[in-house]
Length: 388
Image 1 (cartoon, rainbow, N blue to C red):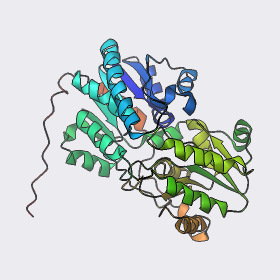
Image 2: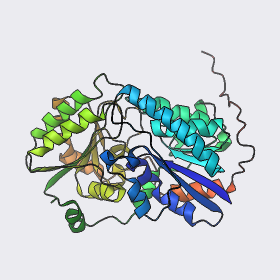
Image 3: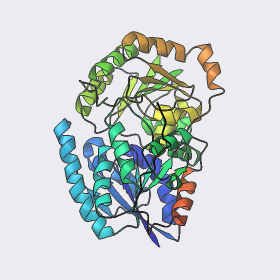
Image 4: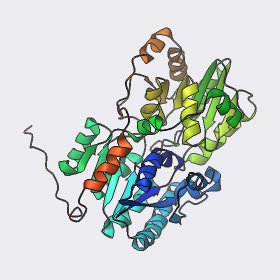
């Protein structure tokens, strides 16, 4: 029986991994192990490890790594704590495969000791780009330390190939976000409104804005411009989600709370959870901000998204994504276009570049078939030389 150790550090990655974890747990030839870390264990972010447990999963280890600070040095310290904690956990759990998703520092702290201690690593959603965040470098670093790669489309497979990975170990699975949508029974509007204590009106926006970690002020000024643009809207309900535990998240979070405090049309959630978040996308007009959900999930609902700044720059985007500069006038212009008849017509034919579902089953079936005995020894796969 193969022991598959899934590492999750945020509400976002757990939301994407949840169905995959269920399939692993239900498979008689696989044993699911779970390590929860990062935001899951912090009350500031909703203690979302409880959501994992309430979904019926057993968490094998909880590794505390976050501090109360959101400075650059605190993130470095968190990675250090994670490396030590994960090294001990992997030696105790002795998994046959460590499965990780994405590009965050919590995942980096897990992959380093897994690689150094000889545990094979499967990386999900490699090859993608986020030029406005240090996640870009983290993602590609994780790719180089991993042994199996499950990417969402051909473009991202080519990027992993560029990094020298063995083509026979790179699999196009499609995006997990699309998979979750097709395997989640979402709330109807009435039940969602009751659950959120919030009433949808004629116009509704879901705003998710995270720090832009390579920006000098971590995107604080960009958020100011977004909030100024939102002030111009009339009769529009605004649902905010709080930012991830990235450098600069505290100032971003305080500004969001301050903006919403005295506005009857605005509400802020520390953590909606995947089911409520996806249900909200279903009933709003667009996702606004700089979250990957506006890129990867919104198109499946044929809903628009306004992508602000450079945090998601470089990702493949559907025609439902409106890119705009991080200033008030550009954001207002994007909002006006969002509600235009031209854009509404465009939404009818939107296709999601991250697939149509089925990623989780494909990943499980592949993991079951792959021989992990000799996978640790990697050769760099050189691409054909181009004469310039």
